[in-house]
Image (cartoon, rainbow, N blue to C red; front, side):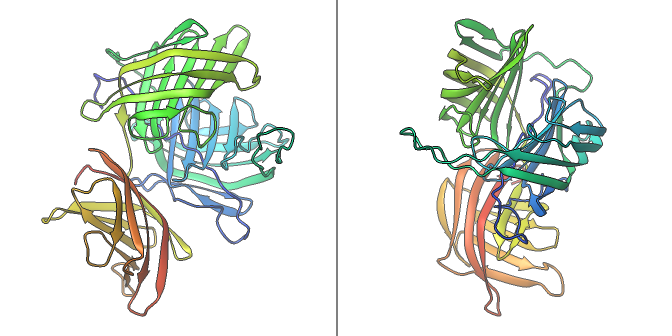
Length: 443
């Protein structure tokens, strides 16, 4: 890590949303997989007896709080927070000492606030040197149902409620980020963040910034509180501020007063990420809007003239390929990648059962949508029991496949894909909800 920059590593603060499936034998909702590839990582939990797998997972310890998360590519998320760090057992009882949340896309998550029982998190591995952690967890979460409103012009989205039980939760070898290695973080140089909050100037004294699979993050502290910003993308532009899981961007502000802490979240406004320099790892931008007390909607703070300049950020994004293939879910445990002599990128994703999904495309590909064929510029191949005696290759059914490159940068590319494939026996499999995030290192 470059010590001339601020000392931080990427935090995968991701959340797990799930839609309750109608069949007890099927997984919940759309599953994107099992953790951070490359380190045999895995994050999973049974929700009312149905197994949920995360495609991206991670843990972070900052300011004495450890957060453990698993996320699918559609943004749905599970989040566990405890006070403290290191190996040991932590009680989850809905307080700041231990809490858990389960999001399903609604404005409010399932949480432990109305639960009479307690859950438990046990951290069995907490290796700062390797940046990895493992453990188990279980808890119960609930949420009140809401119905359509007919008393105003606005109509509330119906939200199912009830109680869900989370059992057999485990995370293995997931990415761990900590804000301390026993030394004082280096000076951030010219990094700066300032904003007027109800006319009072907030000036950041510490700044952490990183880019991970979920987007751009900026965390700051001052004598009066902490201010955190998250943009759900990896590109420059102007984004609407909000306080819902599907918001383009969000800001939280926690005040530190003698009367206790108060937490505010962005309810409206905009943030502009004007510069995301991948050569020097520097970010800059502006923001303004309104913060609303999470406990009192009538208590607001006006944000004006917000700006962050020359903020160095860390980059840690992991190779991931996942998809539904027929009735099975495919998630890469390993992704090999190479550039051929004729300037093509070849990706080979292997899952835990030694099935392989291969994708190939020109190395000079640009953002856009392309047709997948058996012999064209954009190809795919799915093989069960790859390398084994019963290996069975499936090739694309022409005119049925599409690969979409949504973001391409010097360091990574992000995309989606779907297609039909057929083996020699004529059996056809549908590959749907394909997700691809590939770093360009080594290509």
